[in-house]
Length: 375
Image (cartoon, one colour):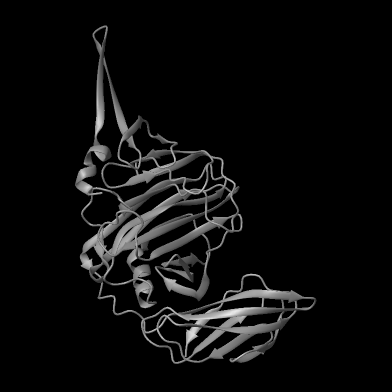
């Protein structure tokens, strides 16, 4: 939706004056919209699945966003703030969350705030930072995360077709990022992050999971995470950063969590250096157990080159989580010292992948984070 076309619902208010015994009572009523843009109710409370509302003038929008469950949820929207008043969700943490109540600046799918600094082309991205203060409960299953949305054009009429860069700050209830582990403890914006890569229906999600959880950040450098994703070959310089979103993914419960304050700053006066070209390669790997028996298991390991240039070879490193031993692997070179396993393999073309069978002793492992390094 064109930002200019949305001014009416983002900043308009109704004014009602009632005469009573010479006194005048004025009521200001804020508009709340459905995804179609039609006013639905005068309230700062959002209980409809798809309701959105202004969150502090024209620069930020809020959404209730119950998208994967039929359970009720209500949020209260304030000035660049949001509080989850009630949430009746209970979906398995292994799958998608029930809801993602959040605030954003820019164009979240087709819904745009009235600002001129977002969207911005990745190749010309200035320094973009964000502050976020949250209050989080100890019960339930949820995470608190940013999402930077990328699209091939400045506005997405529906789901964006570019990468989704997730900055994962904290979680409860055992949820973890999906996909495979690309790198451990990467230093970005004053902290260290484990980097995960997932693919869903042709789309890429890069998740930066903070080492050491926090409930607040100041000056978080969104452009630095974008730069790292470009270097890994997962974000195109020809695409646009269309929105910066912050909120909660809710699997179970979630009432009481709140965004106390949220802001995004785009400093057009201080452009970053050119982000450079895409990385020559970006390999990743995943291990899946196929068969088990008493004292052993067989797994298939997939290795893929998600970059734009060939890989002359690759090396996988992981730690056996339960003391498992590799007894054999087809077509690759394996070494194991204690619980540390290293596997080396041959060339991969851009977009190419290969698999190999691995036989091990011990209990079958669960999720095994694997670091893949081009050789």
